[in-house]
Every structure is written in structure tokens, then in C-alpha cells.
Image (tube, rainbow over all chains, first blue to last red; front, side):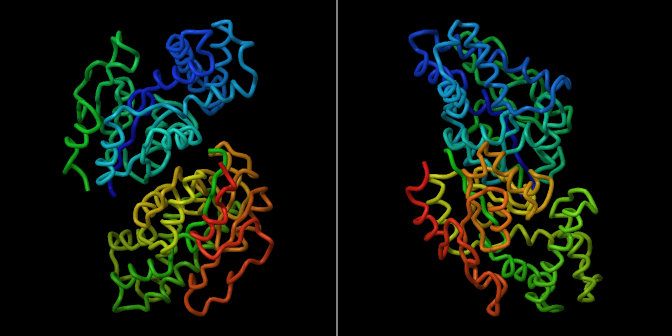
Length: 234
Length: 234
């Protein structure tokens, strides 16, 4: 196959907010609001990666950043003593148990007839491979941050993912529900595809509700994208 | 999943000799003996990797080593002028078109119910992901040489593969039809499983016909291994 599709995962393929809240509810339900906790935990995500991107610390897998951010989140909600080490570790695996949006698995099955498929996520190989099992994501290889030893939106992450498949950036389409991800991918020379996930952040979401540029493909969901891509590759 | 199986691929999962010979026959059939050519080409494999392992040159993907070895093989058989650059590139993709032994796909489908699965091969991510499509190998992630930026049997390759799955070496079983691969994996702390591929090198094969040590598992093929592993993991 001469072309690949690479995907943002958290938000684009899977509903991280519902998935994380489910695990928080299971393990801490009486003591906190699961959605608030999920939002706070996720809110620590970008600042933690920024310390790596800026060179303030070397590459550290997202699993470890998630765990550090969990400690901060438990502290913030006054729950630090509610979980022992083993339980914290178990809760940290919430990021491997995120449900995919209903169109994702059937859409990927259709797209894999013509393209190599891989996640271009900030998640590690360990996280992405287990999440793929849980959420039904038929990847050909786990590319993305760990391969590049850096975090999106640094261009190295997109470029290393193309290189792993032995393809030029122009032979790879980055698929994301986040305009910022696509601006970075386009700057690195990749093609781009946008689809909205209007409830990623809940009912009151105000960002990424529509395409903010003339992306190569704009679709309503993965099934629509599969149809729009049909016949464009070999 | 708390354990993984990682696999040697060339020989153990796929019949490289038949597959390469098929492509040689298709592209050079009138001009050479396809099996002799395949054996010669494969014979350049280990010396080429040894230059990387010994530090004589930096990590270079197997695709490129295969291509260099193809040039040498064409020279050796007096065929350097028979193929243009595009045809050489096409023939080099022979390594992505290798048939799996008949027990491999059904055996892997059974084993993936209990284990994460990945190739621990000297092949690159690009090669392994395309070969997986051709041969029906349901990997969770492509680990192995490219992740480690070195070649087996260096311990780094086995250890990086375990680390990619966030598992300890003792939580990972290396599966191979080559005793030497298993000696190296065991030295790195992994568990081991052997099964013979008595026609990998053709009807007159004299090596690796049987287990040469007390490997953790010894099986007749992947289906037998799946049965022997049944109930040993979670």
C-alpha cells in the first residue's frame, strides 16, 4: 500500500471524557464528580507535555505523565488518601479503556481496504496497543509520539510517523477532530482530514465544532470520511 | 493484558524462501534459479546486520540492507543489467510478500485472546506492517529492531520490545524456530518457546530441527503452542 492514514486518538477516535469518568466513578464515585475529575486530569495533559516539548525534561511516556497528573488531580480534589498505590495504578489504566465513537470501528475497517492505518497520538505504544484492543482500532503499526520521542504538535512526531511507514509526508493523511493538530500536520507537509466531535468536551463544547481551514477532506464522521476517500488511493 | 508474546518472523511465521523465490521467478525467472537466488540474497542478511551490531555503521533499516544485498546478489549472478531501478525496488518488496505457514494465522488468533502480540524481528516497521497485511499476522504493535535501533541477537532488541509493551522481560515469551534467537532472548530475561520449521531452508535442512535447550515451551506448530499456552496467562 502506497498511502497511509494516521489518526489523532483521544477525542478523534475515542471518547476519553466518558471513558475516564467511568473509571473515576467506579473507583471514587462517592467522593467526587467523575466528569469534573476527568476534565481536571485531562487539563494537566498539555502542560505536562509542554515541559518535554520545550526541552525542560527528556521524553517521558504519556503513561507516566498521566500518573503524575493523577497525583496532582487527587491532591486537588482532596482525595490523595482515598487510593493506595495499586489502586492509583489501576485508575491510571483508565486511559486504556476509552470507548470509541460508534462510527470509528466500521469506518476504519472500510479505510483499511485502501490505506495503512496508524495512530499518530501522544499516547505510548503500551497505551495505544491496549486501547486498540478495548476500542476496536485495527492499526497496522503504532506510530506517533513514542516513535518520535517527542510530543505533538512538534513536526517531528508527524514526520517520524510517515517515515516509519516509509512514506513521504505527501503520501500520508492526518485525521483529527482538532484544527490545531491539522495546522501542525499541514505545516509538516502531510495531507489533512477533519471531522467534528462536538461532544468531546461535553454538551457545552465551544471549540472545534467546524473546520477552520480548507483541509484536504472535511467529513461528518469516519464513515463519511471513508466514503469521501474511496477511490482516492491504491 | 499482563503478558505478551513476541515472535521471530522470517522463518518462524513466514516462509521467506518460497516467497522471495516466487518474486524472483516472476521478475527474473528465465535468467536464474529462483531458490538459489533467494538463498544467496538471504545469505547476505546476517553479515549486513553484523556491521550495524558491531558499530561499524549506525542503524539502517533492513529494507535498505535488503536493497544493498539485492545489488550484490544481482552482481553475483551476472544480472545487474536485467533490472532497472524501478524493477529493483519492486523486487526488493518481495520481503513484504511472504506466505505464512498454514498454522500461523489461526494460531495467532487463538493466542491473541490471552496475550498482546508483536513481531520481534529484524524487519522494519514499514516492512513488518505490510508483511502483516499480506500474511495475516494480527499484531498489536510492531516492536523489534527499529524500536531498538539495533539488530537481534543484541539484548537491546528483546528488552526494548518488552519495554514498549510496558512489561518486564519475565512477562514476555519470545517465540522462534531458531535456537540461537531463544538463547539470546533467555539471556535477556525473557521466557522462550520453540517450534521447528523443518523446511525453512528447503528439504535438506540440517539446523534447528529440534529444541537444543529446555525452553519454557516446545511445540510442534503455532496451534500446538496456543494449546500449550492456554490457561497460563490472563
